[in-house]
Length: 387
Image 1: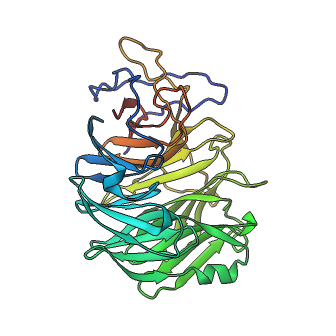
Image 2: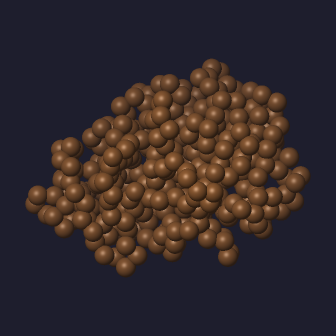
Image 3: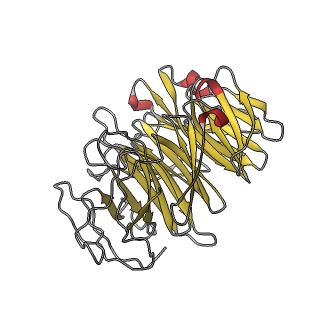
C-alpha cells in the first residue's frame, strides 16, 4: 500500500480534522444505525471466504455478517456453539474453532452447524487460537501451555508446557498472545516484574523453547505488559500496553533471532496498546501494521503504520494515520460527521481493502458501544457498521 496521502492523527485535545472522501465505497456515507447491536462484547473475528464471523464473549454466540457490506446474515446461538464466553476463534478452511471457558473448543462449520467439541483440562482460559497447518490448530492457554489440536478428529495431539519460561522467570504470570509461522509458535508473556516481560519462540516439532527475549536480557527493547503479537514474513510485531514507569510501545523483531529491528516508545499517543495485525504484500517488502489502542492515556483508536525502509541505527516508527472518535469522515449530507465509535477495540480482520475492527465495550446508552465497524485499510476512512 504505497502512494497514499497523509491522513490526520487523533488529536489529544479532541480537535476534528478532515479526511478526504475517496468515493470508492458506496456505503461510506450511510449514517450509523441506532438499532441495537447484534454483537455482545466481541472478543475475536475470523474470515471464511466472503463471510466475517465474530465471537461474542458476553452472550456466548457467534455472529456472521457479509464481509464486504456488513449486512447481518445470522447468529449462531449459545446452545449450538456450546463454548461458554468465547475468548478466541480461528478459521481453518471452511471450519471455525472457538475457544471458551474451562478449556473447551467447539468446531463449527462455515454454515453454522455444530460439528464437535473438545475439552482440554489444565488449560483454564484460552488466550488465542492459531492455525499451524491445514488440519492442526494451536491453542494458547493463559498459563503458557500450548495445545496442538488435530482437527480431523478434534483430538489433543500434543501439549507443550511453558516450563522453560517459568524456569528462567520465577515471577512468570501468564501468556498473553500467540503468532505462528511454519512450525514455530511465538508467545508473549508477562511477569510480576515487568522488567522481564517478553517473547518466547517454541518449536512445535520438538516441544521446546528455542529462544526467549525480555526487557532484562534486551534492555534496548521496551517490553511492558505485552498484549498483541503478529507475524509478517521475517518479522514479528509486538504491542505493549505499558506498565509502571514503562510506557506503551511497539516492537519489531526479527523472527529468526528475536533481535530488535525497531523498539519505539516515542509516541505518547499510543495509549494502552492491544491487538495488532501485520500484513505483508506477497512479493514485496511492503508491510502494513494496524494497532488498537484500548484506552488509557488517549482515547480508543486505531493507528496505521506503513514502515519505510530503515535508514538509521535507532529508527522510530512513523504512523500514516490515527483515527479515533473525534476524527471527521465527511459525507455530502453531513461534512462534519464523527462516525467512529471505537470502544475498547479488541480484534482486527482484513478483507481486501476493508479493515474490520471489533469493539468489546458494553457502555450503556451508547449506540454501537459494543459493535463491529469497517474502515478503509489504506486511508482510515469510516465505511459502515456491521448490522
